Image (cartoon, rainbow, N blue to C red; front, side, top):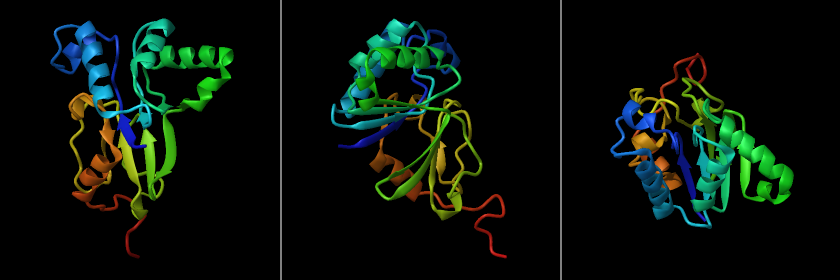
Length: 192
């Protein structure tokens, strides 16, 4: 079982191709390629944290996309475009309580410890987060790679636009963070 992170897939959102200069001729090809890219790295035994902005469209469309994706458990952190996902989740959970065994829904912020490392997962970028001065990692989305990366911050954009249009592994996150260093931007972690 491996752990993956991703954000801002925007399944079904035709305008995102233009907004983010995605290399797809149309929304159907984008959806097909994003699903293929996901399933190329994620197996049915893996855990995925999706940091928001999953899909545009109906609850039925969300259901059809989720049904095509590999994962053992999908932890979903809400983004600003996730009314269809949230609605799908609530209606599906009301009909099938077993949904909670393989999909979890969180507000736009979630803290979790994975393989001994504390993570703050948020749809939005933060300058400071809980335990940042103790080595906690912060992953975010929303910005589609438009925020400059800070080599002095243990954080980065895990969205598909930044990572070959596919989820990235826990191991890759560690590799990226190992090339960074932490410099405090507030009073936490500074010598007195």
